[in-house]
Length: 546
Image (cartoon, rainbow, N blue to C red; front, side, top):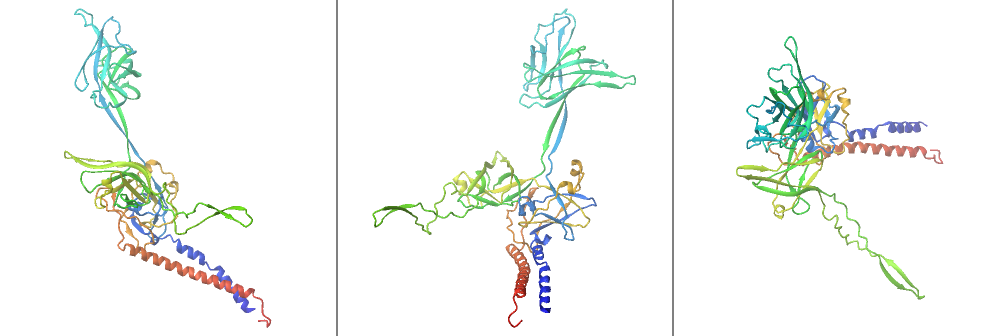
């Protein structure tokens, strides 16, 4: 009875031992040493939320397309929650005031109006070589010497735009009251034209200037309309006395967008599966938005298709077609059988549709030419964000396909890095770790890191500083992409190299496997002992009562 009690107690101890949990925690330990690369991160003040521009080295060596293997640890080795945010595009508005040249048109007092809003309007013009107006007169007969005094009928306005230039986008006109009329009031009608022949309406406005007893002026001096481009305009009166304004200014508002700064990496070529193809090993984490070529020889042109290789699939087993064979039996009946002859040494014929592993995505002509002392270079080819672990270039020209690798162009990938937001817990400096295949994502929502922050506050967050990337002492086994050294241009990343190379990765693999193997060995031994004790407890006693 005592022995059975001891056996039951031993079984309970083995069942209660957390061997699987310990083994699992060792396999999925989320510590800085479990990642192949790390970057020191420091903050300069005591603010809570900080922003960090994601370093280019993270994209080069990340093992997941969504940067799921990125972690931020404090100095105690505890993970710090973070969120990723794409930098917004800044919009700027440039306001300009363009003074207009005013050309008044007169008519004799009592004469019929020669200008109407329908566009029937004759002018005699004098312009310079750029299309700017020098003088404008109506097309009627010249006034007689003894004719009564003439009055202003309309104003022709010239923006002063050259004939080959693009007119600015104008949204309003600002008026200065006529000289000697501080309390002027009128309703005007504005039309626009590009050739002084065809006119289109733009808008109307009530202009008014009121003077106070203390000298202050209340002005309604703007005529606004939809943003329009034009070279000339004409102003007519609907009410009020026509007069020559002291000045008219066009207000031009130009909205432009400035994209965030990009990072780039230059990748060295290697021979592809198909002769003539060039293969570039890139990080799967790079969301390439622009692709270009860098040449080592002057005056180079490289027209090629860009794409990727199809993943190699195992060959399908060969299935021969059935061949009917006739057999005669003793009773004279003729039977038709289908026999299959299978030769294991004959492989299946290749499929013409899948014989070429190349899958094209886009094509472009890249060049770098010097002509008359001026350098002409192709701009980067814009793309939708594309993430590939390997890029393939297939040239159109046989001469380009025959180039040696030393003269082959390098591939330049450009992307917009994300911004990492984190809440500093006071246990700095911090460590940004990355480079672990199969790591689950730990990214949080932005509202969990910076709750209640407006867009303006997010833009003004203090920036954390990132140091140089360095490999871990015992790096886990991971296939890290290799890239060629990039140029010294700002924003170009050069992937750091591990001092140990493959040996360091192999050492890290041995350490991890030995630790996990020991834990799993103890676990299996415990399970075997548990099975042995269970069999002994369930075994019936023998005839001698033992």
